[in-house]
Length: 97
Image 1 (cartoon, helix red, strand yellow):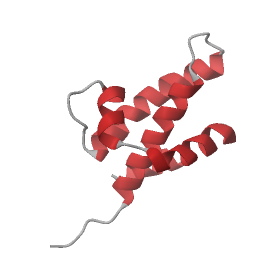
Image 2 (cartoon, one colour):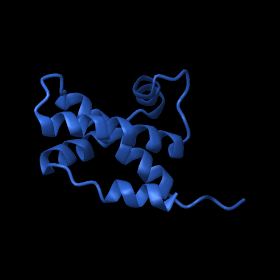
Image 3 (cartoon, one colour):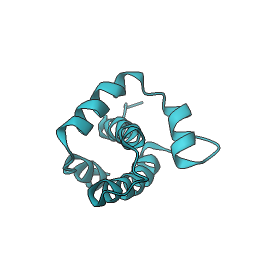
């Protein structure tokens, strides 16, 4: 688990992308967004979501850096919002019963 969090924290992206993603975290709806981004009938666990989103984000980052015409800044921000929000859920300590 800490490996995923460490990897997310180590991402180096343009400041504007990260700022937009952090701003968008306030309106993040996990069930709605993850179903669409991961193309699954239900939202995966935070761990599964982070793994999936890292793959999607890496593809978007490659497209951004190469100047690919199909690159979508809005999709990239949306994926970063989900990635940061899910990483935050992973980092929360578990409640003791």
